Length: 159
Image (cartoon, rainbow, N blue to C red):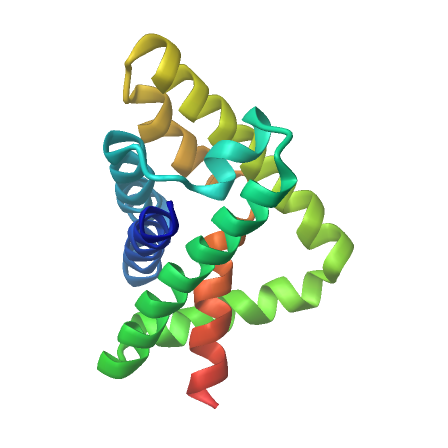
């Protein structure tokens, strides 16, 4: 499960940095690549599992390994540089300006949408909720806890 959780973090990181490269609605649609890949590969992603289990220990492990995968992508983005790295700095500054309470509430909104999208995928075997769920949480201004950690790590190495 650990390697799979790292892989899920890598997939989300790739989608997130695609969003940072494009921005706006096109970038939000590209971000969906990460979650589509996660559900099709059945890898454990914290934001797709938190609403389905009471096993806090498993959720913490999934989150930790998702974060490691996303940090790996953040370090790769840093190594190649470019607009995604600069945009990540802006995103993190905005998150920090919100403060922890508002950021946490925004993360809950994202988690709800992603949990619903994953549940609908499992129940109906339709990828459509995933395709639309990711742009929805971005348009709503919600924060993806795993992707944000990758951006935060990128900002730390930018300094």
